[in-house]
Image (tube, rainbow, N blue to C red; front, side):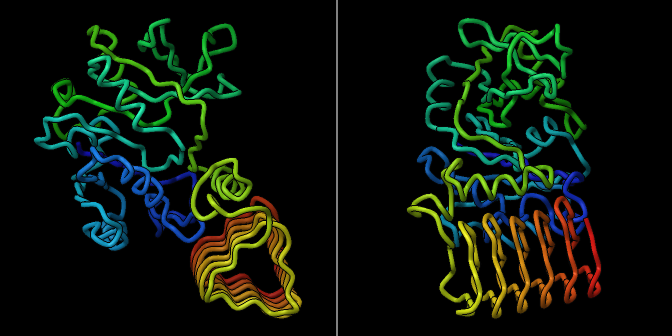
Length: 353
């Protein structure tokens, strides 16, 4: 079985971070996001190849994963000639594949049991199976309604209060039979959610839903990006690098250097080659990326700092995201919800957020 990871989006909601870092390889702790999906797919003996469907900055993604030999799975790339939408991208990436395909949105992190999804698909001899996840605020999403037999009944696009009949949304994971791809035009921008899936319902194809009540998040916004780090550190999401780490406390990589006079509070993550100077404080739910320098007296609290960034002496970063290779000057203050793009220079004593 082949798996397709849809990784061609522009990541506009994460700008400026994604202006020169495609969303599929934004770091989650010290791993690119797609590595989490790849590791999950590797657990399935049925998967013999992963196809990465790319469009935006494909070279950067190829440089990270290569042919997959270093992570133990064969990786093949299909680069869209122009944006094809989710449906067009799936058909283009599938090429001449005739067997069942697993499709995974590249901006989702989940603990879904993919074996169970495949088993359901096979047991129902389905043409398509979609994973759904329940949400607390159904009016903010497009909903997917199912009947009592677990068949997909209809799609509701952000319904008003009196139209809400369920609370399940598309989780971005599908098992598909390529025999149905003939209804997707070749090399055409085509939505899998708005056109392909409704066509299955209209044609009476066996289209079933797997409702997953486990962890699921789309990290497409700064708020969700910060949240996924906190969720992994608290154990809400059981995933690398805190899956098997007992209790609370800092996770310090072997090659990090932390001054004996620095303070690390609660659960936090300090990557390899980090240097934390005297009197600095790394607060709870902070993530310090590879080769970051934290100056004396600096405070980082509940923030994510990408690799090769320098946080100046007595600077403060709280609840923010600071991109790669940024210089934060001495005594600067970066507040909650701020997002600092790669290669930025924040002058000493500046205040942002």
